[in-house]
Image (cartoon, rainbow, N blue to C red; front, side):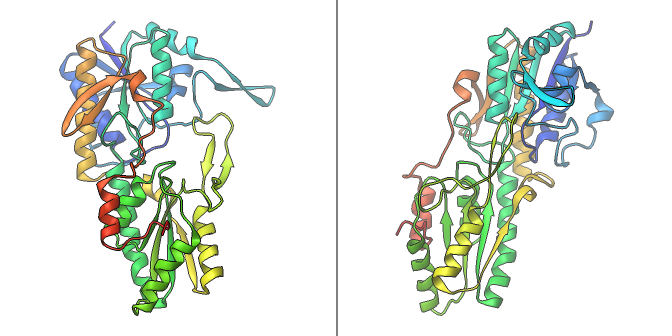
Length: 361
């Protein structure tokens, strides 16, 4: 049997996944390894669905968004959905998945994903599987790496949306509210709000009051600026301190689906100020499209580094960015520690210095 590595992409998709697949495969092949791509996240490992990644398969992937392997955020092998008699039940299929890797001669499995997918990799490791994590999420909320690929592209997309909202807000003298992704961290909202000229940025890390938001809007009107741009991260809590949840999904790695805080903020602004307010939820547009040049490079660096570690016999780790250097940490260090914005972060001070409100005035 030839020497083999495996790779899967799990959780939510993001720009740069195909660049990782391409880089890891090219590196593996250069060392005489075959690369097996498991389909639809951990589902492919449990069910034995995969493709052989060869040069013709990975050709032209660098600029393509999404993932040619497919992804799934409901395929936790330790809590795997199984249909029986027309009903879905959940079983621990991890032993079956680990055994399949051994039967196929997969020396190391490269797992590309966010916190939930990487937690699965850590638990695989505890069962004796040889795994290496590669961090990806548009939310940029993994503590063990300074940045994840996908984040830069999401910020670019959100900034372009703000540029467009700015012109219509100014034309109609309205307040425009833009709800962005990010889960429980405000990185996308902070970066794009700064880049897109937002007047108010609401993030999960800073409690807000509607009075603080109105104070900024009314100050702008007093200065002869009858429109305002408000950016809201999806993980922002209500003024009463409660999460706004769109729905809950049984069997998903991320069971709580956030959404609706933008509508709440817009409703409060219009009711209390009398100013016409419109709400835009950017949603999955932030996950789509071609990756930025930065994300292509970072994803390529991660893919090469992970494959090189696997060839050297190093596993049980996650590759990461520390400063401008690609390094690695143990999977235990990598998961379960969200990276949120510190209250003393320089970008918060920068935003306040140019008059941006965080609704806490």
